[in-house]
Length: 173
Image 1 (cartoon, rainbow, N blue to C red):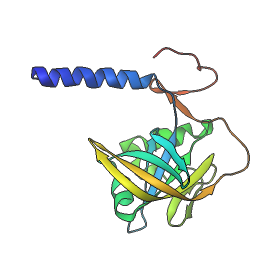
Image 2 (cartoon, one colour; image 1 turned 90 degrees about the vertical axis):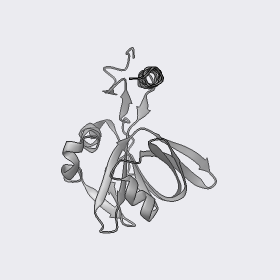
Image 3 (cartoon, one colour; image 1 turned 45 degrees about the vertical axis):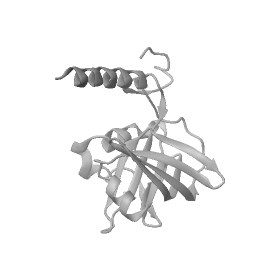
Image 4 (cartoon, rainbow, N blue to C red; image 1 turned 120 degrees about the vertical axis):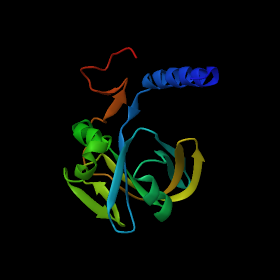
């Protein structure tokens, strides 16, 4: 490893460690391809952008299976997870579980996009802008439809390489 590469590795490793100190709500970003096959990933990089128009952004790895369908068809759904969805999050983040991702839970379809029926919310977006930077693309989506089931649940939070619950809410990264 050259000195430059070594310096980049140290910076990348330090940056990764710093981000472990940032707690984030866990989402499933889902899409459908031209064959109506469902794709999805676990994400924490989802942020509201504007209320006028209602919009959000999702950062998606360009190597992920959901990137192509979103990029080609221009739509995606953000499923906001509750603590009870920890297994869904783990399944959607594991390449070994790819084929089993949509076999568990109650999945429905709206406007061709899959959504988890008991998610805290399902937010359906049409891509308005795409920015590619490094290994990821930022999709800014205009919100077209929102489904919010009744009842507020505790959100699923990821922090320091694990899921945060009331029992382990205090920790050092």
